[in-house]
Length: 446
Image 1: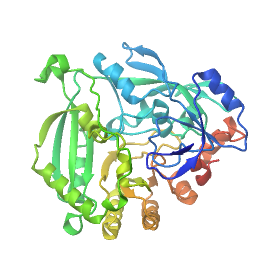
Image 2: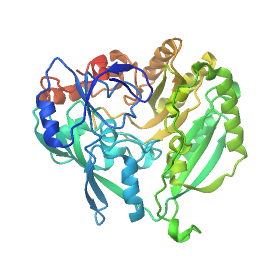
Image 3: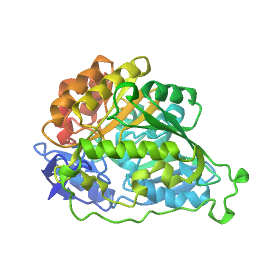
Image 4: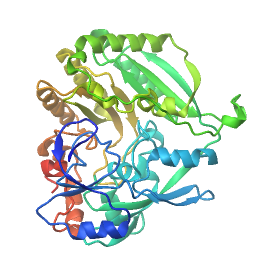
């Protein structure tokens, strides 16, 4: 069947296999021929081709909850369990995930394979910083228990390893204690990029921080933005009704049955949206208590389940990169100048601050600043992205594999200095290179 990532580009034809347990999974893996590529796929929320291959193993039925330890604040579950399902189970018990991305419809296996990050990386690191252990099925069909202390090399290759070392069967994750689902949100106005950076630096102690940028603004207003800060509300100090203090909330919305015409997304429509959004937020309340859904999952919360279809039938490309702190302002300023001059702006331009990188060999975050941009897929966008690649490399940055659909092997290897160490471990545990994706083939990892 035809399948794609969340960006709907590229599209490939693949056989999709859906094992219901580890025994069936073992039969599939050990029967795999070297000539075909095989990769595991969770909820399909990676944007490009990292979960595309000739054969795809879906983890949708590996979705059992195995143990919830409320004394140690840990949960063990199958790789196919979604973050949304974890929140549904844990929020009423006063527990919350330590790191969440911009959507809760991500599988645990996918979150680990991508080592996802959230709005609090500068404080809490990425998702895998809070993964206690994983059970990993290798190409041989064996299941290895991996953690920081046991099979640690394989653990650090698999966390952020894009599914190329094996298939995550289950994982144990450390949770956070909360007393309320409310987030105290503060919004600050930045009239340009310099002010935005200064605000993020000044509020570095805030648990959550993120900035929305108007990437079509130019001149003295280049990088004008809204900075959003957040802290978990202490229920003892809140006026919130005690019956709803720890209540899970599901968002139900419409599904878009067709792709909207791509011509609706253009420089004029994006400019109008960006100006309107900036002015509305600027005029709004500076401080307010909001539900966790609104703060962490704004796209899930708008009530449009498959908002990726808004970019038209050709799909879109998300481009996310990180640049180290000492070069971040200059590099991001150059990127924004390129984007605004080309008139290829994005509705969703999100800037966040990263803390120190972890030990995982292919994890994306490193200390600095990350910017994510969405572009409607059209021929003119790819030469622009090639130019942006060069700016990123000149400033010692790298591009996020989970969002990537077109990066070259040379750009990847220049940005990820540990790729050779990763490949050695992959070769050790997967000598016939059973696990491979369209992305890993393109980047020279398989």
